Image (cartoon, rainbow, N blue to C red; front, side, top):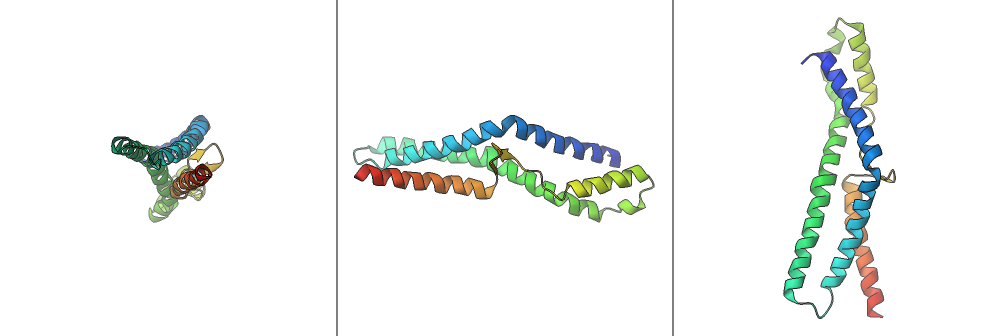
Amino acid sequence: MKMEDWIKHHRFLYNYVDLFNSTFKIPMLLEYLIFISTMCFELYFISMPDINIVNIFKSLIYIGGLASQLIIYYYWPANLLSDESSNTAFYLYDIPWYNCESVSIKKNLLLMMIRSQKAAVVYAGNLFTVDLSTTTQAFKASMSYFTTLKTMGMK
């Protein structure tokens, strides 16, 4: 693959991330909100004193599926994208770009290095980035809301 192709592909990927963010920012936010509320209510349902073991098992499987979906479909790819895009500048520094004969390729590589200083990230509703921190916060929030709901239910 030629250097020009790598440069075009880099531009394509950053444009694709921008398009992805503008298209899916609201659905990603809704996914996180639905996850938090559903997990909270499922935990509350499990904590009921008159629930049988079959329903507990169903709820635990459902919670596991929700958590797996959030991690596998959202957090993991978004985190890989962010990590790889932030490492792009380091990869570019390691190639002998200074030996390149074409001035336009040198300029484009320099622009790639500058652009790669800021990682490409996936946003959920332009409120937060989809990464390990926000995924952990989603789990913590659902547990906090469950605890609050459980405390209010005891009164």
